[in-house]
Image 1 (cartoon, rainbow, N blue to C red):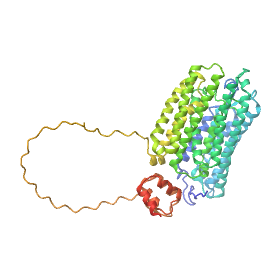
Image 2: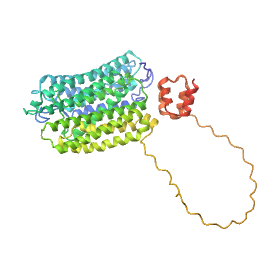
Image 3: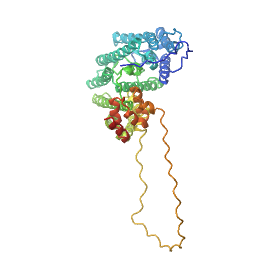
Image 4: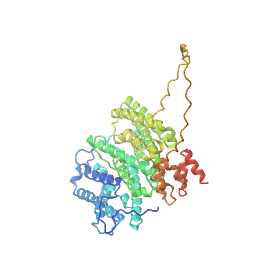
Length: 533
C-alpha cells in the first residue's frame, strides 16, 4: 500500500507548534488511553477464586503495575515532545511512534506474564485476573498505537505497519487459543468450581456452548484481520466498545454482573476482557491503513449488519444454554425460563432479519432496519428482567440486549458518509391531502354579474432576464482535475453530492468509484459516465 508523505513536523527554521495539525481523532485516542490507564489503577488486578471475595489485590498493590502504568501515561507526551523538536530536528513521526510503542511494551509484557501465571498455576491455586488488567491493557494498546498524522513513506513507518499486522493477528490467535483452553479447563474444573457438586451433563454442555461462542468470535476476528477486511475491523471496534461500556456498568454495580470482575482460563465462562484489547488494536490507524479500501457508507452499513448478526448469535446460544440448564434440573424456575427462551428467540429473529436487510438492501429497507433494532432493545429490557429471575444477567446480557443495538444506531446515524448517501432517521410516508367527498352538494345559483368595461390591452412584455449562473462549489475544480488523487476523489464523491457528476466525468476516477456512482440512479451522473465511452 502506497503511503502519501505527510508533513506532521514544522520545517527547519520555523517555530514548532506541537498541537498544530493534529486531527481530532488523535486527541480522542490520547484522551481514551489516559482515561483507561488511570481508571485501571482504581480496579482489582487479581481476585480470589471465590468470585472476587477474600484475597483480592488492586492494581495499586503491585508496584510493577503502578510504575508501568505511569510509564504508559508518560509515553503519551512523546507525541507532543517530538513535534516540539525536543528530540532534535531530524526525528520523524514514524520514529516517535516506534519509541512510544517501545515505552508501552513493558506493560503489555506484564499482562502476558500474568496470563501465563493464570494458565499454569491450576484451578486450585490460581487467583483470577481482575478487570484492571484488561482495562489497563486496552489503554496501553491505545497509547502505543501510531497516530494518523505520523504516517509517511519512510522505512520506520513500514516497520510500524509490520508490527501492527503482527500484533493484531498474534493477539487474535492467542485469544483464540486461550478460548479453546478455556473450554477444556473450564469444563474440567466445573466440579471443583461448584465445590464437589455432581454437575449434570446438560449443564456442562451449556458451558461448552458458551465457550464455543467466544472461540468462534475470536476466530472470526482473526480471519477478518487476516483478510484485511475494513468491515471486520469496524465491527471489532463496535463490539469492543460495547464490552467497555458493559464493564463500566458492572463496575458501578460493584462487579455483581461478572461475579466480582474475575476472568480466568480456568473459570467456566467467557473471557470478556480480550474483546476490549482486540477493539483497541482494531482502532489503531496502522491497522486501518492495512485494511482494504471500501466505500465509507458501505463500510458502516455492513459493519452494522455484522453487529446485528453477532447479537443474533449470542441470543441463539443463550436460548440453547437456558434450555440445557432447564433440562439439567438444577433448580431454575421453569416458567420464567421458558418465557426467557421465547423472548430470546424473538430477539434472534428480529436482529437476524434486520441484519439481513441491512446487508442486502439497506437503501430500501432503512425504516425496517431501524424499527427492528429499536424493537430488539425493547425486547432486551424484557429479557433482562426475566433473566435476572432465572439465572441472573451478566456482562454478555448487557452487551447483547443494549450495547450492540445502540452501536448499530450509532453506526447508521453518526457517520456523515452514511447520512449523505442514505439519509438520517427514516420516517414513514405521510398521508396525502384529504380528497373531497364524491357527492358534493351543488352550489346555489348566483345572480348574473353586472357588465364590466372591456379590459385594457396588455402591456408589452419585458425582455426576459437570463438566469443567474449558480455559484461554483469551492472544490469543483479539484473534482474535475485529472491530477486529483484517488483518495480526494473518493472523499468528494461521498461527502459532496452536487459534485458527483463532475467526479464521474473525471478521467482519473477509478473503476470501483465509477461503479458505485452508477448505482445511485442519478441521471446527471449516468450521463457523465456514458460520455466517458
